[in-house]
Length: 180
Image: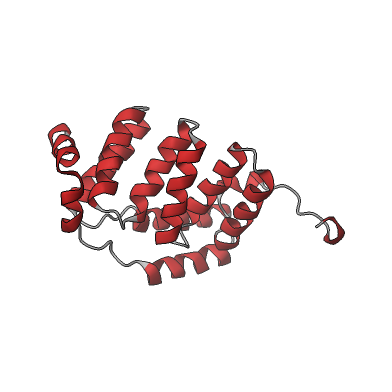
């Protein structure tokens, strides 16, 4: 895998022309969002969320999948520098694949590099506006930047799509009508 990562970093932008389009899971994601909104329990909502993750992490091809998996594995083992290298290679190879940016944002968030996380989350959402996890990540990132009101607004947007997100515990009381 390290050889693959090294080759990806050396090839850089030349590879982007070879990346196929990301699989179109729009209809299936819309169905999962509707199912999450109608779910009757947290357990059911969690299962639906896991199905969403399967769609988001379905990379455009096997090479992109290897880079994504490498980045996620390195992140999980707290090798943030290695994760960033793999995810940088993924973004260079597949600049239109939202999950590359989302996973890189997650690493930046864990490193408390909130400006970098926010930039990648914005790109994720430009490519995939209903990416519930990216919306939730954006909310947490805005809060990490001290932008609580914006963060709460984005968290409400994420929860409107999936009311079972674990981050729902961070939602503050909505202001009364005359407090707006």
